[in-house]
Length: 341
Image (cartoon, rainbow, N blue to C red; front, side):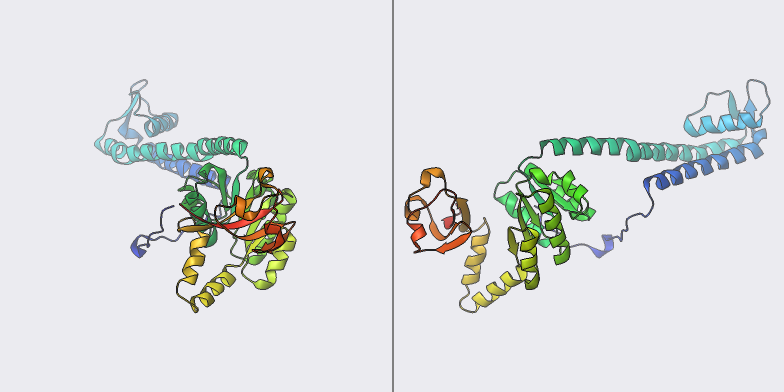
């Protein structure tokens, strides 16, 4: 994922989402087109003596409307023509640019209201059809952007990742990584259903606010009872609430940063080593895996290629030296430090 560049204030622009709906925007475009046509008709009518009808020699109001529409949309058929220099200059300098403007606005309208929506709907349906065992990231702030980068570094296929965020700019940054993006509120049922949360393997929630994050967890747990959900929570008091809402893993980045700061007082390399364990880019990595059927009954020392620091059985955590380390069971989870190479 590309690193963010420092923005140049001279090239920055303020943007605000339009409050006009699609049909209101369409009505404004049609009104502009109609107003320009009225302007051209009025000029041609008041300057009708500058026109010549090669059919009957008389220029009526119907002829003016006909000539205006033909001139504004095509180059004309030659049955009604401007004969004075003033009329020809008007058609060359005013009508011709308006004709080009008509083409652009009509093409843009067709793309916005027909082609773009049809295309996006087809693409979304195709992506949804193939979504299986995917990872959903709710929010693309600092935490989830780092999580996305780490997932891609670890070799996760971008096609297995869906990013949900209400911010279009955040989605553009995520889309640059090749992942699927969905604009919307992840706390709403229809948004998570569009991302097929029921078929996902995991949900990573980083909403920026604890209340929003907990609401997303509640919604996701209702739609996907067996989903693995991880969430970032900033306040200690909200960690238990997040777990009660259905989160499997609750991460407090502020507390973790405080632990790293405290560790750095006892030596400059402890914090570096802890950070090294958390990322795949370091020389060592902390890995969690499930004990298989073929490993049942064996000891930790017989199956591990690294240093096992924790064993989890039936929800209970066991440290090194515990009797559980001597005889493993299928389904146990072990945490081990291994070389990342």
